[in-house]
Image (tube, rainbow, N blue to C red):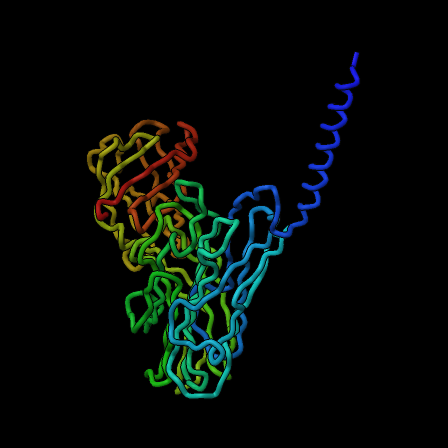
Length: 418
């Protein structure tokens, strides 16, 4: 039974609870006076360009800040110039800040590189998006770097960037940026290779280079190769962009899967384009050619690693011999210790390499005679070679007449040159 006093107390507590609830609800209007503590989400910034050179042409580049979860209050990012001799208002304009409204997850700002006709030297500019004044979010500031070229110059500017064919992550699970994954060189070469180098650029980020109007006339090849790269195996996509004041505007070439980090020694390169220069006139041609894979790195001796047919034991050596007049083929000799092969002094296998891919085909020059009735036959197969590691990785089919067919048995050598 509820007494009169208990009824009064119950009514008072109920009224008080309802009043507090109403007051609390009235304060939850995203006014910055919230009674709830908002979480501190992750705040990331993406940009159109991290490092680029360009002609003053009123180009506009954007940057976007994105929250991992909406907030009850506005989130503000401040934008500032942290380096360079470019002048705000004269050489560029930029939003001084951007605001992600309460309840939203992103906001976008822009920077504009202003055009003028004043002869002037190359100017630099580094913009930072975000700093420690940003509240209610965990932020790592982003930067955009620009090299602003003289608008009236007859120079040709080259911008070189790259991306990964698929995401690579570090030990914490965070995505590795393209420039942290690979440090690539931008080379200007007299030939379609990375040997006849005329000049180049090799910084710690995406590369930029200016071929000046006063440079000698002639043919130049634009080549990419490795300075350093992650041990994680990924395809690397390349991009090359040209600009010349009043003539060429953001002419861009893309080269998907041009390089692969699993094949990344000094002999590996990629020819992106050819430039023919006459005065301040430039003729540009997309080349898109990988460095060839040929037999030369493998000539010498090689050590057996795997032989599922068991002619070789692990550690046995054989000679790798050049094929006269054919730079893309080599011979795997049949060693003299293989006395069970009656014609070991004349029988051998010829490996022919596809110079564009490193893939290989194998064909015996004659039947291998295993010295028993019906024990001879053809040997052929396929596989690949790796000119950076010296691996010769083959699958051989032994078609031995009365003995039968033994397909796709592994035969792997390691060149002793590496």
